[in-house]
Length: 270
Image 1 (cartoon, one colour):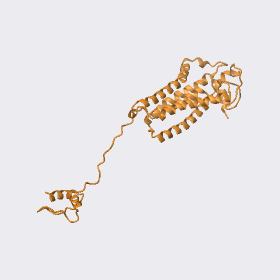
Image 2 (cartoon, rainbow, N blue to C red):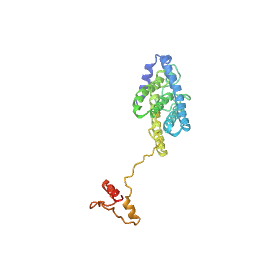
Image 3 (cartoon, helix red, strand yellow):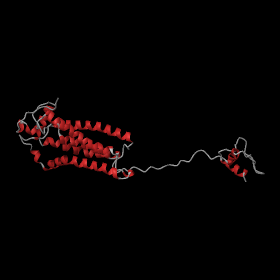
Image 4 (cartoon, rainbow, N blue to C red):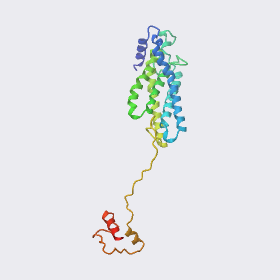
């Protein structure tokens, strides 16, 4: 696997000797604050959407409920994977390595090392949260989803890669955190989508799209009402045309649906 060589090469590239100078850059520090606080803001917003859905009338629901649920569970699942693997793998952070002024040895990705007992390097929690941010795309209408993805994806990738520039994670920590989170999100979306179909929720309901009220469309019946002559015959009364009235043409029944039959029936009962 090429990751060990790539990890060290990238880390050495962003460090000046034993110092990661970009960790003091104001813009990158501000970007990190977005990565730290953003997930909490998003989760609170999704819980608010679910709460509003319970108090607003049915026809004014903001979006299908399985979409906020998908967003929340994506963030939770990503962090759950991270918290399980960090102490299990025990990989030391780049800034804690001997080469960069620390006391730990470098270990390749996925290797159980025990170099770290708490707050370890693999995988990156902030990178996993950034990947989970892609779940927000389901809230956009389909016509805007591609545009939103083009804008959102680079921002989330910058938040994730920012951790490499700080010497807090190796590149493999970030890449695999993204892959594991996206894999978890795929499974969650299948589950929430299936649950939505089972409960009859709209599959494509998005923010700003209200559910129209149900209307009944009255379709006129193609079957005509029975003619007057047919009703009289059904009651056992003989049909007697008026004096001087024209009789129906041959092959044209008294109960015909044609306009001519209606005119003739009016003449018959004058």
